[in-house]
Length: 394
Picture 1: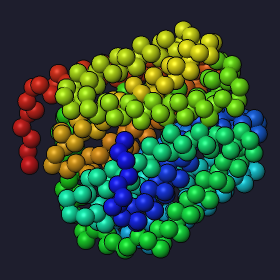
Picture 2 (picture 1 turned 135 degrees about the vertical axis):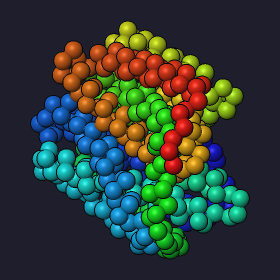
Picture 3 (picture 1 turned 180 degrees about the vertical axis):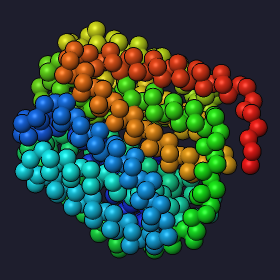
């Protein structure tokens, strides 16, 4: 996680606030899930489908809406997208029943991926020469903040004033970001033509690219299943007080930030060994969490550990996609982001079925099993990459 440099353009800081608000809106549901389920009179697994729906909305809406708006001017487009996010969060706060809440979450999710894509384009366009990458990393810092600060704070607000107040706070944050974007962000033209994007689709003919993206979709699903049902696992299984959940979310977020830094450095030295080793450690830690799930102290320690291990693998996965898709890295990374959301949807769905069947505690074992499948997939993908791909027709 990089510090924010004093020479970062104000437009990027405005966009970073928006990224913080939008991403908090995605992750915070894990901390208020039991309250939503109780108030809406639905099961925990049904409430967990709100996570699945959000992920699917990003998977479907991101590529489609981004393609449809490729030629739009960036500033008017991003203000419209942020307006939809504000309205979507307010609709969530005011939802009279579960179907309305479900629909509000889907509408919000449909514009989220396109917002991120355009925010990155604007951030890169405002950067000084030679500083595009570090400027974009500042934008991504908003995502880190959403996990370390946003999700715990949103959970605390929800526990204190009710879960609806959490969505009101997120809407207010995004509205402030919208005002700053309107004032500080310059206009940027969209793509002149979509032809180059069509040409870049050829990158997915590469076996190694497909396997690198498959690893993202599979290996992350286990931890995301745990994260979706984080609050009930902590309160109903580990017997923490409801007020402790924000603190434990913060612990998880700090672990994620530390893991992101350490994992990136390790992956620079030995990417595949690091990825397989970290996934193995994560699977073992999840089994340990299952074994000690009823004890508070071990659970609190292991919450930090799974946050660190789960996010330590991400830099290596991203680097693998960039390395294998050097001819079209932007498009490949966009699809890789969709693969991560697919992992979130799969994890939430499988976690819900596990909670309804064997019980909440078994989600830890489910996560360990899925992570083990991710280890096998990573190992197979690595061995396949050692053999040359067959020649393909142009």
